[in-house]
Length: 280
Ligand SMILES: C[S@@+](CC[C@H](N)C(=O)[O-])C[C@H]1O[C@@H](n2cnc3c(N)ncnc32)[C@H](O)[C@@H]1O
Image (cartoon, rainbow, N blue to C red; front, side):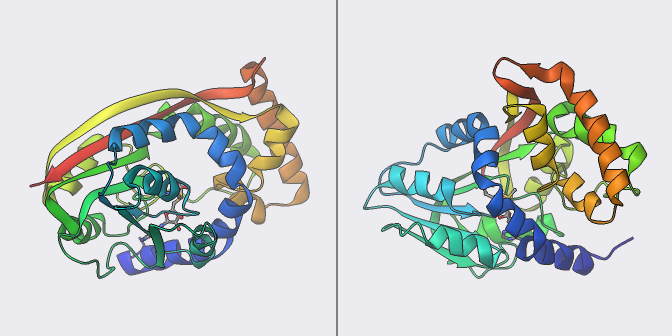
């Protein structure tokens, strides 16, 4: 079993290395796939003019920009992300009322009680020590503030992710399976775990709204196959696989995706939690 230090170092290396680069390269496509969920979480956050917002794991700053528009000139947004390459992309947006810092949100020295809204779109599932991380975030929140974030539910509830991965497994080197408390894309799928983490970290009134939407993966199967090798768990597995294994895996993925081809492209179901809470 890996230690928490090892897990944290692994996440930092991934998002500052291949993960960050691949997320940046694939960002326009990813943005299209998650657009519906993104609108849901931004609407729920309801950032108001004059508010101060922290965008946790802000990535390229797309949601920070939407939040900056909502809080207007009198408000301010701080985006924090562990990935230098993604923060550089966020800074290139040149927003008048948003700034971006490279840092680990789990330990970053935020000004205390400074934010009205702690926000995140898929940026809070990667902490090696989530209770400690959310305690740090909790300290940054005003007593009247709120926490609003979006995370994936379980892999079984997310066929858009599971179907290709499952189809490819017989042909690829074994996939590293995260433990139930390890960071990762689906690590907040279990709402009991998330509720425990947030409560221990000092939040109250933790509420979960299930969001279910179709996830568009691409216009056709060949395009999806191409993208699948660029970002995500399969891209990581392909690195260690032989070309012949990748070929067989791609054929199996194509077969598995065929029933999901629609007139609007390749679409499979996706499932998220919209999580809200207040300081306890
Ligand atoms: C799935 S991406 C989401 C990015 C962005 N929120 C978006 O929706 O476009 C996850 C982000 O979390 C960042 N991240 C991971 N661990 C982090 C940490 N400990 N502190 C700050 N950011 C972190 C990654 O660098 C990455 O940008």
